[in-house]
Image (cartoon, rainbow, N blue to C red; front, side, top):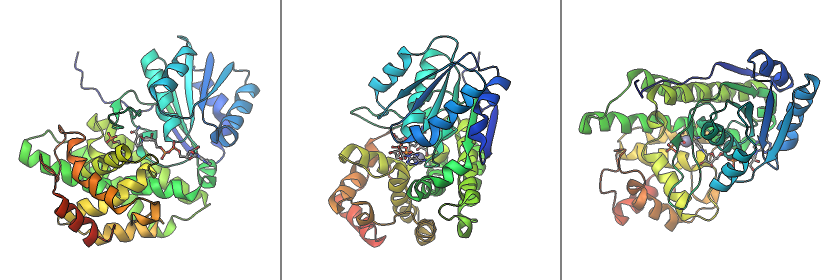
Length: 347
Ligand SMILES: NC(=O)C1=CN([C@@H]2O[C@H](COP(=O)(O)OP(=O)(O)OC[C@H]3O[C@@H](n4cnc5c(N)ncnc54)[C@H](O)[C@@H]3O)[C@@H](O)[C@H]2O)C=CC1
Ligand SMILES: O=C(CO)COP(=O)(O)O
Ligand SMILES: [Zn+2]
């Protein structure tokens, strides 16, 4: 059997108020034997509570577990509660979704993705990133059987999170440049359809920038739809390649260096400005797009010290050596890193 398969969700809902129909959706998919809700401390009220009300209305048995970190310990705790007839629903931000995704994958049961915010493209994809001392890069798990994204809930989440989701999508522009480079220089296999979908997802943000505003349901819907198509690009490629290049390596390097990193999308946004400069592309347009969605464009805005930016730039190429990018096999010198961050006004 081929190990190269494309995984997709079976049903995707991006609608206002859809969270109230969770029970009905689970029933229609025959996932109503036993539900395990994986949620977070903050997302219990906005997400898990309405899910519970819906499951109770439909007489569906459920259990709830709150997790605070995307760690191996959280995965084990969740796995202990999973039986063969459990369906796991991840209700929360990226960390919660990843724990629900990986624990359900490990135990061979279905997973439903229910984001309470639209902060990155892992919501729909088969990838999960779990923190360990060495790295936070994603591994392949499985696609959600269903995605239930209540655009009203997403719109009410802090706008900083939605802006981070936009930045994670804008990162696709440099991710694809890196992929094309690796295809030309290293003969890495390349999917035109995944690349086209990835770029289209980024354009859904940059072409709609004037319509992306805080607390508006249609704005949250645009971001979520773009994250959905970006996630589908990852599904087609079977890896995060269409959405993660040198700009993500820079963000992963920051995750390693910093005790309290900024949001994933925010760090990737800064990386995209700088990597677009290295690619010789229109880095100012990237910066303008980030500013327009209120995503940060300087290290100062997210409380990162200049020296940490330089260190992250210098170590980024070591994070995932098998994925070739504009940073090359040897990375960049301290002088070049400083020049890059300074010229692009990130520091
Ligand atoms: N699976 C994948 O492919 C990917 C995974 N990741 C991982 O995802 C995680 C980052 O995800 P994020 O969502 O950026 O951060 P997060 O999961 O840490 O959430 C950020 C904060 O937002 C809060 N939040 C979420 N929804 C809210 C709402 N409706 N109202 C109020 N607060 C709300 C959460 O409680 C949390 O405090 C990292 O662990 C990162 O490694 C990042 C990119 C891709
Ligand atoms: O964040 C991602 C795509 O936006 C996943 O990328 P990584 O595989 O580099 O963790
Ligand atoms: Zn990302």
